[in-house]
Image (tube, rainbow, N blue to C red; front, side, top):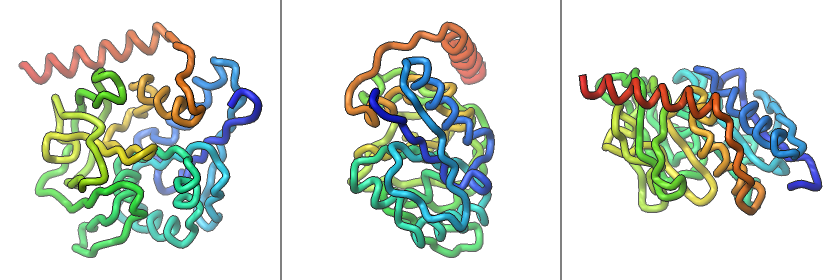
Length: 240
């Protein structure tokens, strides 16, 4: 990774980019540059074939219609699937999580095929979840807390080939007490914020997977302070 540019694919930002999710690409780019690596964000819009040669791919959230449009585009242009087969890392948020799954159902009751990169199926729930979301992470992140903002109606069920990213402490997440999904080097979550700004350990996990080895520590006191304030506020709301 030190000898070449790391290419970060930002997929369909014009339809999958609510709540600042496109900022996840800038977070990853900066965390690489601060460590002395060259990095470049590569936007891939609608109507453009998805290249299979990028190192890391990001999908954000979006409305129901945008999600269906995105899924259809990514099925038609299978570059993302090819990239994962070659070892690329993928991170999807909210609608991105659902599109990466095997199937999701729209508000019109119609089932749509996902990409099958996560073993997850999603259906509309009875009530929209709009709140701060806090979860304890899996061992991948040393069980440190995850924090973000959720706004979704979906209830996601994980199959045997996906493990939860974490367990919900506050909020809804997948709807069964778990949050997110992990299959190999593909991660999905309901955390907005953007998620990788609020959870630097998660950002560095994606980068370590991309590099093929752990990266040097990167303390950023301002990020740690803001993260601590968010977690403290969320815990107070939960106990009040």
